Length: 269
Image (cartoon, rainbow, N blue to C red; front, side, top):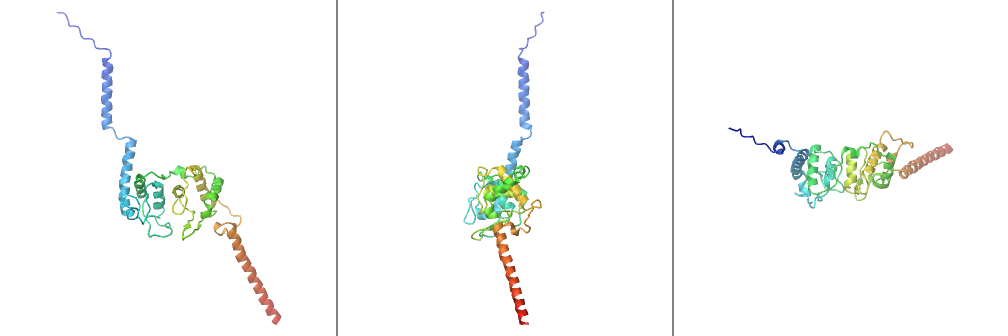
């Protein structure tokens, strides 16, 4: 009997089998592989928003409304962004103890993790300024002299020339900037809390904000020299001149009275 000749395989059969094997492997990997970094970040963000909503319901909803829409006791938080939350809660200004002309800085009652969760929830209500990262607020490479020019042009009217604060109208005031966290200074410029105007990146670029932060950190530090001696609060030449006029002239008057009194006694004797 003649042997049956074996069928010859098509030359592309091996290629097809290989492609099927690769496809099957890829499908299995997609089914069992761990979630991607983007998915993990999205999950973490969702969890932060959920936790932040719980914190908001307890500590913020009574004034700002259950959905952040605002009430007669507090403004709307829709669109204020995470930067506003990090500033207000991170400096202890919020939650507010009582209404007044201005909410003062006080002891912080939330941890940074809780503040981040609150910020994530409020940011989910509407787009707004984002909390800056460390590189954005770092004074490394900043121009201190330029920062001083920018500060005197935009900030000194309220915070005075060295950032030590000053009184405003109707019981309000510009707080001292000495010792304030650079992140909070940046966020204040971004969001414009209370009486302060806002300086978004379209108005004041990130580099200029960093220059101002570098100036604030330097002007009241040990690196800054004061050739005039006692700086009298750093309020400028008007206050210094007024001090010299009142106390200097007062001292001269006191000396004149003393001399006149002793002269009169000498004549009587």
